[in-house]
Length: 179
Image (tube, rainbow, N blue to C red):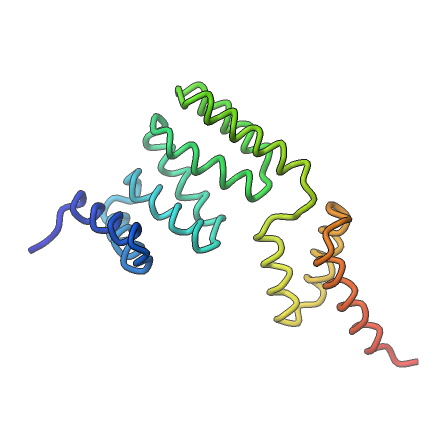
């Protein structure tokens, strides 16, 4: 017996809610193979990817969901909060304005705006930047690690971890110099 799109979506949602992430991902992807712009499958897969620390992919999926159905408030909330967490403040501001025009709850949008302001004034880089920095460092991609660490320390001079990575990198580099 073959499942309908709606049954498959409900199966994915159920798996998602019970923490069976691989099954949920599989259900959403099967839907998207037949209906690439299915708004709920795109949104739910995006939400799943946010929880799996894949925000770049999630943003693409959220955007697709919004292009198909910009009237669903939850799509806007997921998209905007991910933009804010990724420190994409210009895009987040634009999305807040669009969500307001589409009738999203003003109180929720105000809370997101406050969150964005506090995040913008915060002293931490995005988690994806930190993850990239660690990956560069672990993979001995020292040129990339140095560039990213310098960028982070310039933007967030009180962020200790990026200073530690930069210092360790420079220490290793100094050890390679023959006098």
